[in-house]
Image (cartoon, rainbow, N blue to C red; front, side):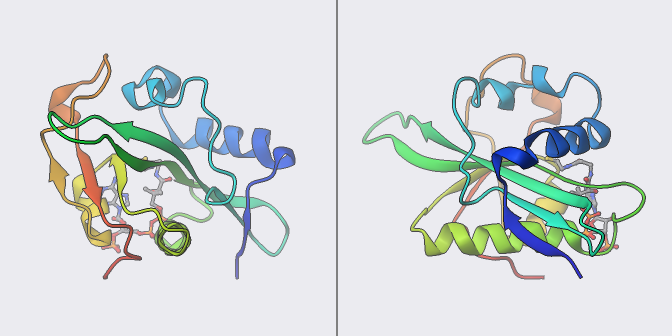
Length: 158
Ligand SMILES: CC(C)(COP(=O)(O)OP(=O)(O)OC[C@H]1O[C@@H](n2cnc3c(N)ncnc32)[C@H](O)[C@@H]1OP(=O)(O)O)[C@@H](O)C(=O)NCCC(=O)NCCS
C-alpha cells in the first residue's frame, strides 16, 4: 500500500534524488525543462507515493504552461512530468499508473482542461494521450524522439 501526498518543500530533495536515479544524467538539459525554468511546480497536483516504511517509491510533478495557437487565445495547460518510480523496488507494480491516474483526476476536479507531456507514446497512450506533431518545443528538442500529447485530463482507461 502506498500513501499519496501532495509534494511538500521537505520532500523536494528526496524527489529530486529519485528523478536523478530514474532518468539519464542531464535530464535538466531537455527541452521540456525549458518550459519549467523559473516556474514553480503546482504543489496541489504534484504527488509523492510513500511505501509503508515511509520511503518515496514514486513521484509526479506538474507545471503550468501556455500554448500559443496560430490564431485565437493561448491555451492554459498542464505539463505532466517528470514521473518516476523507483527501480527496481517499485517499478512494474502499477505505481506509475496510480500516480498518473490520481493526479489527472485531481487536475480534472480542479478544472484544468488540457494536459501536455513529452514521453513515450506507448506508455501514455494507456491514459488517453495521443501524439501531436503540431506543438513546437523549445530547443534542443530531438524531433525523432519527440512525442507531445494534449488530452483532457481524464483519469485513463486501461
Ligand atoms: C515510466 C514509469 C514511471 C512507469 O512506472 P511503473 O510503476 O513501473 O509502471 P506501471 O507499473 O504503472 O506500468 C507498467 C507497464 O508500463 C510499461 N512501461 C513502462 N515504461 C514504459 C515506457 N517507457 N514505454 C512503454 N511502456 C512502458 C511496462 O512495460 C508495463 O507494461 P505491462 O502493464 O504491459 O506489463 C517508470 O518505469 C519509470 O520511472 N521510468 C523511468 C523514468 C521515466 O521514463 N519516466 C517517464 C517519462 S517522463
